[in-house]
Image (cartoon, rainbow, N blue to C red):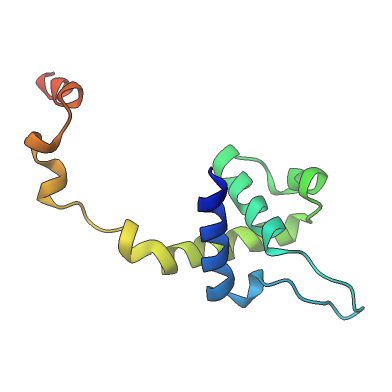
Length: 108
C-alpha cells in the first residue's frame, strides 16, 4: 500500500473515531498510536495473521488487536462505504467499456 493512501485512511479514521487517537493512560504514559492500531488491523485483514501473533512485531496485545480490527472495519464502512460499497451500475458492466482481454472470457 502506498504511504499516501495509508496516511489518507489514517487521517480519516482518526477524525471519525476517537479510539484511534493516541492518549495518555491512567498512569500518565502514552498509549498505543493510531499507526500501531491501524497497522495491526491491516495485517490481520491482508495477511491473515492471528491476533496473538501481532504482539511480536507491533507490540500490541491480542485483545487490543481484535478490538482495533472491529473498530477499524466499522470506521472504514462508515467513512468509505457510500463511495466504495455501492451496487454496480450498468456503465460498469457494459461490454463496450471492458478491455478486450476481459471480454474474451465471456465466450466460455
